[in-house]
Image (cartoon, each protein chain N blue to C red):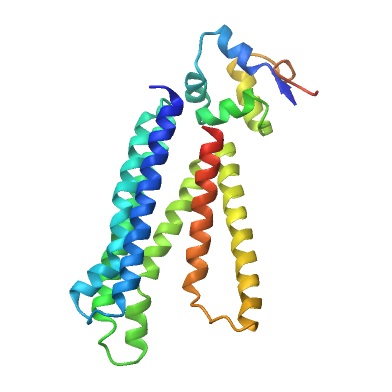
Amino acid sequence: MHERKIWDRYLVGILGSLCLFTLALATFIKMDRHMPEGIVRTMILVSPLAALVPFLWAVVRQVRRDEVMHQRKIWFRYLAEMSAAFLLYAVVLTISLEVGPPMPKGILKTLVLVSPTLPFLLIVWAVVRQSRRMDEYLRLILLESIAMAFGITAGWVVTYGFMENAGYPRLSMFNVWMVMMSAWAVIAIVRTIASR
Amino acid sequence: MKNILRELRTERGWSQADLAERLEVSRQTINAIETGRYDPSLPLAFKISRQFKLKIEDVFHGE
């Protein structure tokens, strides 16, 4: 198959799963306020993570198309580590959201609610390990993309800080994470389109 | 920096993927070096020249 077509199919897969993620996230934000606590609400809260399955499938298909065996091995190892870390994250997050909220206020409740941070650190560790396995050019591209995402996020945070002085509502710190990841995703997609 | 990587590779009938496999780098990296979008580090430049059994200055030269 022509290489450009291969990249086009990959991009369709990636963009499709990102749309699914956004849809699941929007559904959970809309329904969260109206739903009583319980397993159904918890499942809706973690449902955006399910969108990672088609995302993973698109990436696996793309890696399988790579003709360089050495690179295939590197990426499959990364996907295995990342999938395991994400699975663990989803399980701990579900348990934390189910068990944490009804608990009485105290250190134990805080620990249960922040427990998803531990598998999240495993996700970060998987990215760091992969960046060390990558060759120097791909590592440069990765670091440039992260630096650009950092710049966009810093610009957004500072600008919104000034907007808060003008009366705009205070936002949760969680928004910073969403902006950073969205910026990173957009930069990665734009660079993929430009280089295919 | 300029290089004759593409010429050396095609002389031997290797694809970019073949050379990438031999050097344990990605095909994108070979493409970026051949098109002049990326200048490799000294260790990688030495690895490339050794692959073709040439001196580093025979493969890479200043503009």
